[in-house]
Length: 248
Image 1 (cartoon, rainbow, N blue to C red):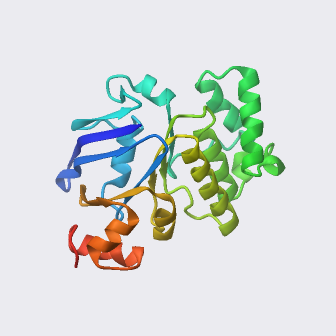
Image 2: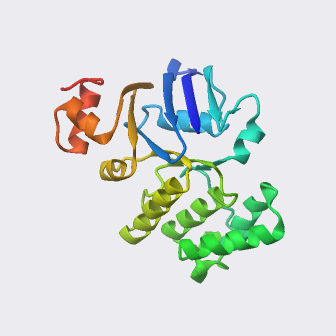
Image 3: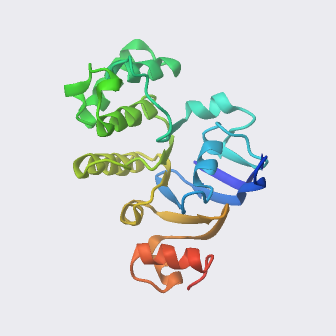
C-alpha cells in the first residue's frame, strides 16, 4: 500500500519567501484501492506525488510504499513503485520499444521477461504500429502511451499517476482508464491525480481534496457530494474549495 503520514514540504523562495507546498498531509491507498488527489493548480498535488516517488524529500512526515520508507530506502521503494508525470520527457532518439526496454533494464529485468512484458504492453495500449518509431516523431497521445508503458514495465505493486489522460483523445483516454481499473483488480495500490472530475468519480474509491497544501476533505465521491450539498462532482469540488472543506 501507499501510506502518507503527516507529510509537509517547505520551500524557501527568494521572491516569495517561505512557501508551504504540503502541510501535514495524510492519506492511504490500500491494496486494490484507488485514492484520488484533487486540487487546483498550485495546490500541492505534484509536490506530494513527487515525494511519494522519491524525487523530493519531505520537510517532515513520512511515506511508505508497501512498508518501505521512501526517504530511508528510496531504491527499494522505487522497485515497487511506478510514477507517471507529464513533466518527464522521452528520449527523442530512442524508438518506443527502445524507450520501454531501457527502463526495464534500469529495473534489472531479465531479457526474456522484459521482452514478454514489453510485447504485453504493446498489445494492451495498441502500440505495435509505432513500436519502432523514434519518440521525437510521435504524437502527444502516442508519447503518453509510451510514458505509461515505461512507468509500469516492471509491474509495480504501487502506481502514482499524475494526470495520465491529459491531452488524450477519447479512445486513448478510455484505454488508460480501463488499464487503471484492471490494475486495481490486480490488487495494486494506486494514487491518481486528475482535473477531470467525472474520471475521479468513476475510478476512485476515495478522494482527497488538497487546497493550499492541506487536505481539506476526504471521502468517497458520494460522501464529498453529500458534504458539499451538491449532486455534481464538479460543483462539489468547487463548493468544498470555496468553503475550505465545508459546504458553501
